[in-house]
Length: 153
Image 1 (cartoon, helix red, strand yellow):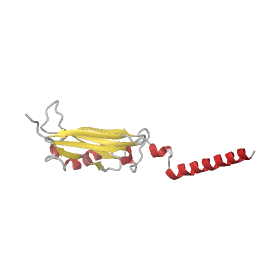
Image 2 (tube, helix red, strand yellow; image 1 turned 135 degrees about the vertical axis):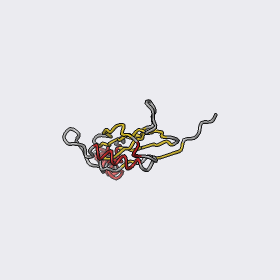
Image 3 (cartoon, helix red, strand yellow; image 1 turned 90 degrees about the vertical axis):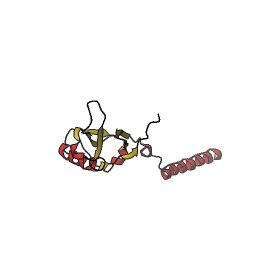
Image 4 (cartoon, helix red, strand yellow; image 1 turned 45 degrees about the vertical axis):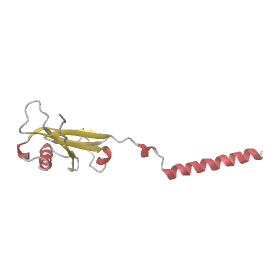
């Protein structure tokens, strides 16, 4: 009889210890949530641009219910923000034509606005498109820029 009581007491202590350890280590499912990562890469001239972000980067941006409310950033405003950002990367931003403006869902409930501009010198079929990603708080996710290596002949 005493062995059963001791065993029961021992198991209770182990369970309480494991529970407190789990709380201390915070092994809740939230800690292991999947982060959606997006990467947009493009080349203009001799430079490569890479825009990399996750839904976590958008955590503090406003919520938008696309089915119930108009976009937090109207199209005209998105184009203005995009063109202002474009000024940092190209010499004649006013000559670049707006190719498209659209909204992209990232993760479960966050959105970005994507504005693409086409180079004034590009021909049909060329890929001279510059992409600007704008968070719903009107801040641009700046691209990482690197120079392309010349091909070895």
